[in-house]
Figure 1 (tube, rainbow, N blue to C red):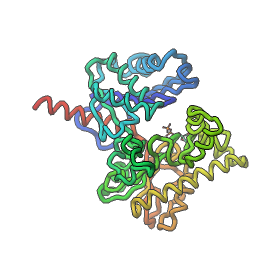
Figure 2 (figure 1 turned 45 degrees about the vertical axis):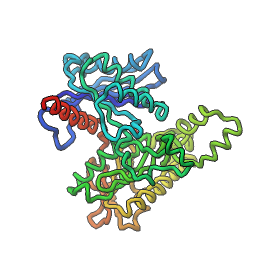
Figure 3 (figure 1 turned 180 degrees about the horizontal axis):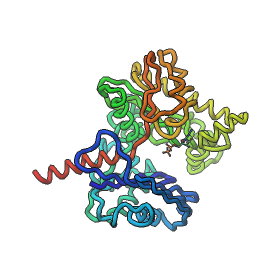
Figure 4 (figure 1 turned 90 degrees about the horizontal axis):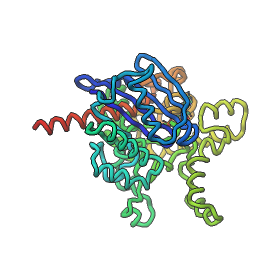
Length: 410
Ligand code: ADP
């Protein structure tokens, strides 16, 4: 079964193709084909890279007049040019989409129909940078592939069973009735990471207390107990919680009231908090942790403040997750910074030495993929896990399609 995965972000579009023969493999396979489009100038100029499982690669910078046109080009790399792996799009059996916001309506993945599309559209108000892009991708695939089943895999679903105390903001009660509550995001990644942690540790997920750390451009932690997310750092939107690449994370809401009274508009505040804050806002250099590290080595004071603030907020949020769990068996780091930045892992873990957590310095330095990097004597395991959201989406898609096929046959 050939499953196409579409993962639309605010400034990028990733896509990959999996070919699953027979049953699902227990280890995540490499995709047959993968491609990524990053906007250099929003909805105008973009850099596109594609590659096949056999390492054939292609790269181009092109101009597009719309997102639709850009996705069509991206998909053409599946059946034409050096990274061609299929003869036509007709070979695709199912399409899986990462959908950022599923609200309270969707607590698990769903086969896309008119009702699911209406919900994604309705929830665009809560995820304006993501849900409209997801919907556009879904509608385009409907036009291209007609009746091929499409599946929405929601980034909020894994957190949808959080206890009410973790999901509620202590504002007026009617916020809850209006849907103003903590949803949590990066759920596909946190859930994959929790499952993978159990696999690496050779233990049952049901007996583990885990803190999963998705540290990429966006950053969040989740407290996972018995395989369920019981707390997380992101909230009503992906702006809450940790300091991120360009997002502030949690700030005192009175700062916004203060700035509004000085005449700042909602759009201006939105832009400030989402695009001009975090590592980039504080350092004035970059949202990329590699650039921050370089500048720290050159004694740049703002870069040092950005680094220290990032770690300070990370430790504070670790504390919150730890207390929600009442202890921790393993900490799993994933995504760009989580997988590659040994000093971030070391600095964050240093704050947990009192738990008997000790990192194996050499293993940590090597950033091994899907490995335990704690010492044998450590009371808490520490794992580095390669983010595989796309494989998690393909798996979800496979399960739902199998279920649908069985129910049609019965
Ligand atoms: P996204 O959240 O957009 O999926 P990624 O998970 O790819 O992003 O993470 C991107 C971030 O990861 C970059 O901005 C950069 O800060 C960080 N990163 C990537 N590689 C490294 C590395 N080798 N060392 C430190 N940080 C890295």
